[in-house]
Amino acid sequence: MSKYELRDKTASLSGVTYEQSLLATTALTPPLLTRIGGPDGFLTLAASFYDKVFADKENPWFLGIFASSTKSEAVDNQYRFLVQSFGGEELYKEKKGKYTRLVGRHANYQITSDAAVRWLVHMNGAIDEHEELKQDEEAKEYLKKYFRYTAFYIVAASVYMKNDQLSGGVQIDSGRVW
Image (cartoon, rainbow, N blue to C red; front, side):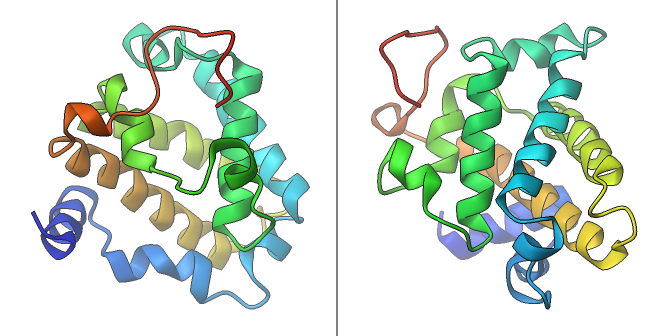
C-alpha cells in the first residue's frame, strides 16, 4: 500500500483528510505550541488525557491497551511526542531515538476502530477542559482533527505492519526506556 492509499484509507475511517490533519501544525498563528501555553500546556493535556484513560473503569478492554506502562510513563511519552510534533524541542527523539514510529510503537496493542473512538472521547474531553484552549475554537477544532486522523492512521496502518517492524510491548520491562 502506498502512502497515498494509506492516507485515503485513513480519511475514509476518520472523516478527516491528511491535509486537514496538518492544519494544527501549519495553519495557526500564533502556533499551537504558543496557544496551548508552551510545553507545559502539552503536559497538562497529556496528564488530563491519561487521568481520563486510567479512570475508564467502564471499558476494561480499553484500559488493557495501556497495561504495559504506568500512567506517569504514558504522560511523559505523550508530552514529549506532542511538544516535538508541534514545533518544540525534540524531547521524544531524546528519549526514543531518531524515529517516532507511531504505528510501530502501537502495533502490539490491538488498536481497533473502537479503541480509536474511545481514545478520542478521552482526548476530546481533555482538549475541551484545557484552560488555554477553552476560548480558542480554532485551535480546538484543528487539534481534534489532527488527533482524529492520527488515531485512525494507527488503525489503518497497523494492518500492514510486519513482525519485524513492531516496537513496544505487552509487558512492563523495568529496564526499558520508552
